[in-house]
Amino acid sequence: MAEFGFSVAAQLPDAQGRAGVIDTPHGEIQTPAFVAVGTKATVKAVLPESIADTGAQAVLANAYHLYLQPGSDLVAEAGGLGAFMNWPGPTFTDSGGFQVLSLGVGFKKVLAMETAGLANDDVIAAGKERLAHVDDDGVTFKSFLDGSIHRFTPEVSMQIQHDLGADIIFAFDECTTLMNTRRYQEASLERTQAWAARCLA
Image (cartoon, rainbow, N blue to C red; front, side):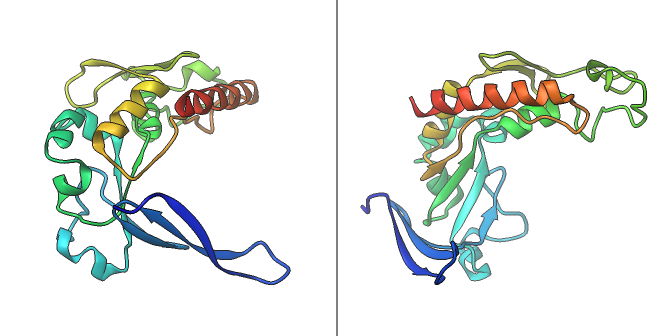
């Protein structure tokens, strides 16, 4: 099985542009690359054996969605993400941070449409509840499926992604909204940097 690696295949003279090759245990990815999105371990309307025909060299799945359903443990028991979805090539998983927070705070779902005069913590539409609460250690959230309570930290996200068996995994980050104040955005940036260090630990 191939080791991980990266090599530069071509570079623009007097510029930063380049093309390269990422080596993974499940094959090469020639960059820049088209990566198919298979959020729940399936690329919609495309059979697994036809994914390569689209020009995709890899598939990106979502740790949040697969953790909630069918469960990262089930995917692991099936032999990992590639085996689970019948895709022999390289796989990516994102950390779940965007989904935890975008679904949790109701981004495009429960945010008030009229935010003039509202404080930062008040931009939730009437009759809706905030499903995610962020602190410096991680995020506590309610499942959008059944309302059950879950906790994601950088360490939990990394473990889920390892269980899913992706070749390339993403650091857990906080997703803010356009309504957050500059002060909050700056605090979030510092928190995300700290989380990235924990993801690498």
